[in-house]
Length: 303
Ligand code: 13P
Ligand code: SF4
Image (cartoon, rainbow, N blue to C red):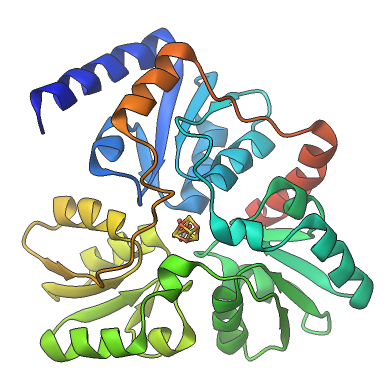
């Protein structure tokens, strides 16, 4: 870490106290942002954390749907984002109007909405899910009911195969995870034959079929702690390598080259400092949308 980075980290720590703020960050954030954060985790953990913290202000270092979810479930808190332009392209692959149309086509269907979605889309959905609880959430819906899974086709296919259940899918996807090919995984496996393969369920089915474990980001970090292996192939966004290397310095982590989410890297240490200094880029969700979206998120948190 450079002297400037150290100075900025100290400044951030003072500002947090002064502004009654906590900084929370997704595991895909830049290393220095993870260092500056009070809490680092996956989408589900971050949603739960926002509810627990005492501070009046939460600075969310991640992408917009995550900050929106924080505001949806903790409307009394001020939620700030260092770069409000950090979005998730998959979340924009479906609109609220698309969901209304789906519900019209399948009037008895239950809409399960991956949290990687806009507040408007959540407001039209019955229940949310994250990558760590998607199977459990869909399984909680009685088998005689039709499930409509939005917007991630890969996660939906994973749930569908896992539960051997007929699910209506929406053709959304994460281009970062979809960029990982089965061919690339086979090459990595040939090169590192003793490595265990850990994949995020946003990856394509052909990639998941080559993996030993299919897990959310935080669960991948936990899983390494449970296994004896010293070598891993990690099939998700590269930001996770920082906490993995920090926590398990005696392990080797191999990673496909292109799995990089540029939106997750928009939050820099300078922007985080400015955000805290000026209390800027507040995330708001209109009440009529927020209340309906909150139902879908709370339905998930209750399961
Ligand atoms: P997690 O649920 O593992 O946090 O994943 C979120 C995400 O955006 C993956 O691309
Ligand atoms: Fe969205 Fe993919 Fe980036 Fe996750 S990695 S935030 S799903 S674009």
